[in-house]
Image (cartoon, rainbow, N blue to C red; front, side):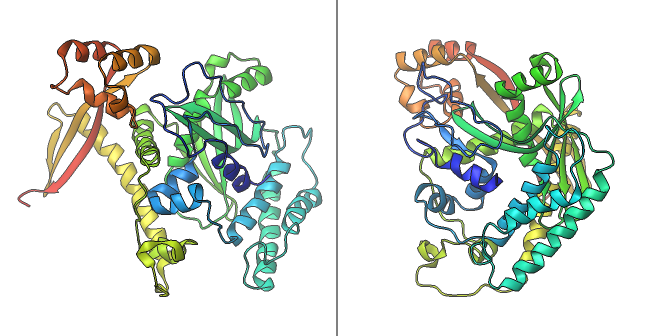
Length: 427
């Protein structure tokens, strides 16, 4: 089962990108979505008010909202990508190697034959190669890579908890799909989530793993599987560690469990992106790198009538940009933590003035009570288009009756959000 194919199926499920979303996702009284079995190439039908979402969709919307529309709503065709073919074949072999049903380590030849069968299922053109020699070179590279992986791990082989675990979870009006490459049980109901990478060995932000952590800890199906397999309480499920495994270099990059603040920062990005989809906001976001390799360039109004080749060397700049962005996110978390420890929430550091910017953050959990109150005061349509953040805005809207705002506050769980402003003094 290829990862890309499964995720695309979820993105094209019934009601995936259509319909006006309900405030909390799903019509009142709607039956819960059916869960898919691990590795099953079948979309889970989304309710008419649920938006099917995933980390791939988040990444594409943040890269370019119009590209998201072309890909997931207009369903314009894409060219096959060699790196997808390579990654899918490697993942198929690793899925076989770590299959929990294996009582002992499988033979190397069988391990490599799974890669070979997946690779040979399509010819070089269907995989997106410009010439057969490039396809052959990648095939040999895959055999060498997997042989190295086998030699490193076969002696300590132990079946994991799950491989290629696919699930869909309803949260905040979204039907979120994840596909976890490997999940290990660390004891006591604690899990280690591992995602395999086959591209360049670059510093990666753990935000994809943050989505996996959030969804795994909310997933009732995963809790049931954990309880059945290890006879531990389903309520004890907790993600302990997150890992990227770079298969070409056999290197692991580990991240500690993300705290609530880091998860909250990431989830705000998810809600902003999904909110843009729900509001049908698809502006183009042109850039040298993303436009150069975009399959939809000919349909984009930004490049209407153009036939210009972008300059070479942008792949290195893109890798540097991704590394800088990941480092910036990590530094932001550290800055917020440091400023929170100061009574004033502000400090002077060299030529910089740092200020912790805080604001109210409300979480509403009693769906029916909130909806009833909104309808009573004629605010339902205003709040439901399209995010919970709109409900939070009503709390501080002085044009609304104080009794209504007081009742709304009683239905909320207060918290805080935080950001950092960094500027040069005197600027």
